[in-house]
Image (cartoon, rainbow, N blue to C red; front, side):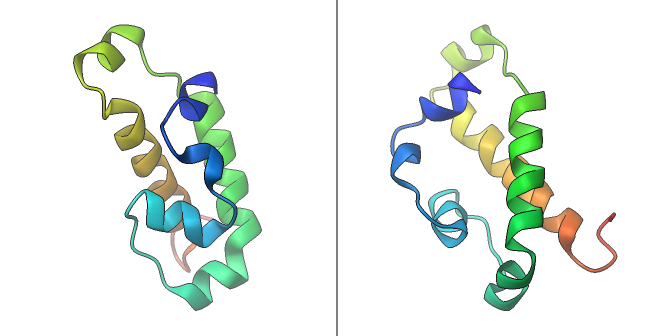
Length: 85
């Protein structure tokens, strides 16, 4: 997960809402409040399972941010009613 912590600004995020705002992932506040721990747990698991290839990171400096954004959005969608869990 070292790649994730190298994204500029990620170490300053303190709440679930701040992650969604930082990665520009749309969310419903009421849904996030009720499923916050489930979403963040799934996000953490996805971050650990998805290690980007070094050459992809060198090609696009936004690649880590984009990967983290996609994983956060997937984690949120999984926790929505009918979203896969």
